[in-house]
Amino acid sequence: MKASFYVIKIKKNILPLIFLIFTMCLVVFSNSNLPAVKSSLTLWATSVVPSLFPFFVATEMLMHTKVVYLFGKFLNKIMRPLFNVSGEGSFAFIMGIISGYPIGAKIASNFRKNNICSKEECERLLSFTNNSGPLFIIGSVGILMYGSTTIGILLFITHILACISVGIIFRFWKNNSNNICKNSNFYNETKNVSFSNLGEILANSITSSISTILLIGGFVVVFSCVISILKASGILHMLSTCLSPLFNILNIDTSFISPIVSGFLEITNGINVISGIPCKKLSINLIFTAFLLGFGGISVLLQVLSITSKTDLSIKPYIYGKLLQGIFASFYTYILINIIPFFNFDI
Image (cartoon, rainbow, N blue to C red; front, side, top):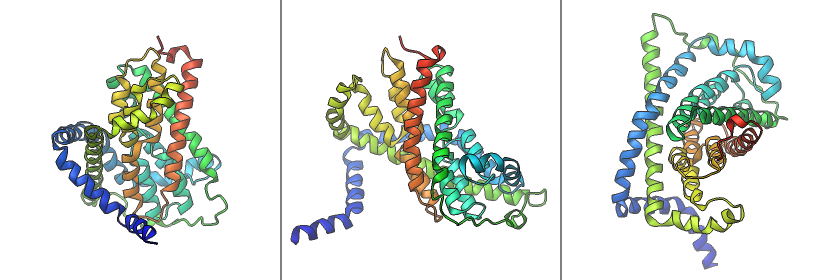
């Protein structure tokens, strides 16, 4: 009885214990944490802000125009049979592909707040519209990390194929639900942008976008600290040792273990290390990279959770969808590498 009481007590206080341990580790491993924080802030300021902030402002502004309505009107015949969502969902899908994390989730949440789509439709959108953008995949991963535009294009193609596959699968998510409520008056009720209110709407869009971009910066810094603590404490090395037998059975270099674990937490750091691992079969590097790009990492998951927590949307379809997208992206990358010689970089 006493033992079960202690178990319940620990369960209730697990989060405070984790936060306490994290705070202590920040002090104990400050020598390694400080460089990690500086590096992550530089990454956020030089890469994340320039690539995402303009898109945040643009999507906020577009929500005050008839663009979403036009997307819904003309693309409903594609979106409804393919993904079982209204045509307006195409706006989240297209902007999610163009701009990257976490634009798709933000638009899906905005749709729910404004009742443009039903709860079930927005949850379906969450599962496949929150994606890595071409600037990150082709520019950062392909050109900067792998030194090849072709690799960037390969990873972007398989990333999009994977997200479409997940969207088709999730068209059956809560398919029996009759909740198809939709605010048809939203476009009439919303204050549309004009020269008279341009300043007000632009200011509101910038304010909202600054809040979101600062939130992302906070997650980048925190998870850089977490990865730094795991490395400095030897936990990452222990995990690598435990997983080594599995990788040996699969005949995969064990040097991939540590960056995969890091990438599972925060994709940029993980992919950067994976791209630098010398391997005769570069396809192995690319398959792991494709999985991490599809999954997105725990950092992005928590960013999405912070956005959806302001609505009644469930995070479950997002988690299931991203795991599936990672698997599909890896599979499609393997297929294209083996059937198209142009994409085969193995020595």
